[in-house]
Image (cartoon, rainbow, N blue to C red):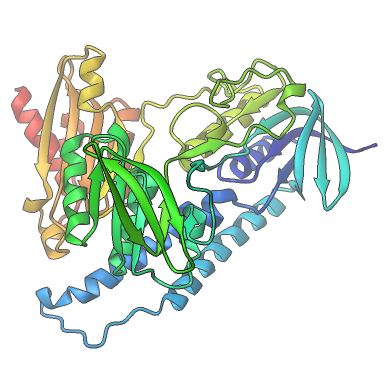
Amino acid sequence: MVMAHFDTVVIGAGPGGYVAAIRAAQLGQKVLIVEKEYLGGVCSNVGCIPSKALIAVGHKYKQMNKASDMGVFIKNVHLDFAKVQQFKDAVVKRLTGGIATLIKGNKIQAVFGNAYFINETNICVETSGITENYSFDYAIIATGSAPVELPAFKYSQRVINSTGALSLKQVPKSMVVIGGGVIGVELGGAYASFGTKVTILEGSEDLFSGGFEAEMTSIVKKDLESKGVEVITKAFAREVEETTNEVVVTFEANREEKRIKAEYVLVAIGRSPNTSNIGLKNLSVNITERGLIVIDKQCRTNVQRIFAIGDVVAGPQLAHKASYEGKVAAEAIAGHPSEIDYIALPSVVFSDPELATVGYTETAARKDGIAIKTVHYPFSTNGRALIMKQSAGFVKLVVRKTDATLIGAQIVGPNASTLISELGLAIETGLTVDDIAMTIHAHLSLSEVAMEAAEKMSRQLK
């Protein structure tokens, strides 16, 4: 028996799903959103939001312990990790509560349970043994991803994934992190700020597996080492022995087998799309060998009624990418000519200092045969950065030679996650370096570094 019919059904209420549902409702569609666990998905509950909360507290703790450099002497600074976790949980509760309010305010019906496609126009949702069927005109798949589990490192009390790392009751004395990507560096760095002895094992030649250029990652690596983090590259984790109080990780590096003890081992080697248990075989949707759903520029699959967004499709697994795609899919269903265009899609690592990139990197531009010029401008000359005692890093611009148009930008430094937005807007709107240089930037601000970089490039091109 069909419970109800909807114009659009959204499977998954993460940053892609709930944004898609809201946009669809704003465009006049009757919308059902189905969520397996919690509103806000992994990002809001056990991912982006809680991890950034821990990182923020770690930065604060580190700054207070080093305040004497600025003439501020603080006695008896100590960490109450139970309070830290309460703070993190309160942030999560507030934000997810806001999502629930938005869904209700836009008159979207929400159902909790496991969604399964029966065919191109029907799904069933199973909740506590009870199954209900719904029909629809269109569906948006936004089921997200899950941590990849290594066969030799099955999750347990002391072999944990990112979710486990965010819910520890105490700060561990030591931790081995398998994977030097975004998750490994962010969480490893956060715990290092709390005083944990962290060892990062990365299989490739550098952190982030080539996602950022070496001139940027070297600065992050230097900061990690200043916190006592040991970064071992070209290292391959082989096995783990677990006792009640510790783990012993065996790994290979430089053709040598080595062993290291720690209280926990965090497996952070990536995430795989949640596409295997939602009935896609009943839809004949095209899927890659990695389990990713194939889509066109409007996020539509080969089945005209079915759309897919976020971690279940190709591209970087970023919350803001999923949200962007969700809006495109909802608008495409409504008949709008919306299409995805990733040229100004930013990518950020909340390391210390932060990393951010948007548009072309120098390497990618040269690989595509684009005639470019690049320029660096350091934070070490910026008054605000010096006052903050965060002067490591730089702004780098990638500029097309023929017309001085900005086509890429990279930042390593304080508040890079915020500063990258200006340069992303410049790329999106086709601005030249003169446009940026001639824009009046507030003094004293970190944003002046982007202006100075643009001015430097403008002089070089004349």
